[in-house]
Image 1 (cartoon, helix red, strand yellow):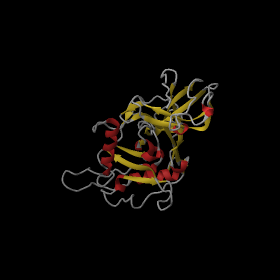
Image 2 (cartoon, helix red, strand yellow):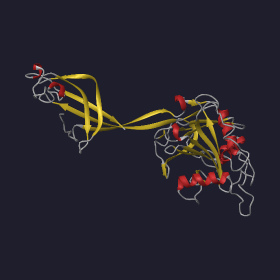
Image 3 (cartoon, rainbow, N blue to C red):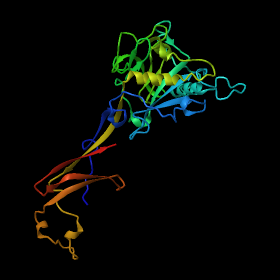
Image 4 (cartoon, rainbow, N blue to C red):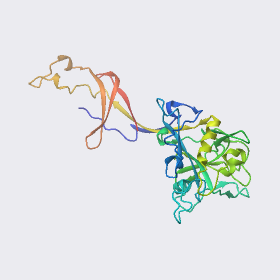
Length: 348
């Protein structure tokens, strides 16, 4: 077996490409309807999964290819808008909505006392801090490395404005983002494909932006106080110890908007090994069938100007272990009058 040692400075090249695909199943570009499971979206008790979040499918759950695309939830820092887990003394406010709010602020801030705030309070430079949030969490199996900023287009429907078209502001902000515990954070604003409509991040005076987008962790946090100014059907119920089912309101609004688009982004790292075969190299075979029992060549054509074919390149580590094999699409003829340059590509 012949061997070539690679010059890491000249023979090995690293490259990274970003591949963008649709997030939704079957490479569907835009979801135009919502489908839920009556079993999962059970709202009958505070301990049911449906009381915490509702999963949305691409097609009816009994259909072939049905898969969860995203989940919708509602959180309130005081636990309002959903039933308490128990009526025992001291349990007031311990409810699904409080669990959701605490879960996401712990993820984003790493602090159970930090609250979600949206740009644009009483003064433009302030942040508005509502008591509650809506959450849309894209199923992890739907995207690769992250969701791609600038591809979010979500239409909400309801009474009042009629339809509200939401996007992130990554294009308007030229990619500038706040870095949180869960990666980049962009604002959710009115507009399309990452471009904000208007000149201000503040969407509703004294109520801030419409929300926050976390593409590296795959979820969207919406600001009810701003959204319900435009769509009154999304005004959350905030009665203590009451199943107001606010997350169902958002599911219905997304379904009425009939348009939810967002792309997935994958970083594919490649390493290229340029295998340079000189004219004096690799002109003989190591195939044992070419040698007889006495160690003599069986074929006289291999004695003076042999001709062989290169079919495979094996990559070995420093300890001599075979770690990768590259098969050529067709054999390369090799003799003393020929040289070859073989490019081996590893994707990972």
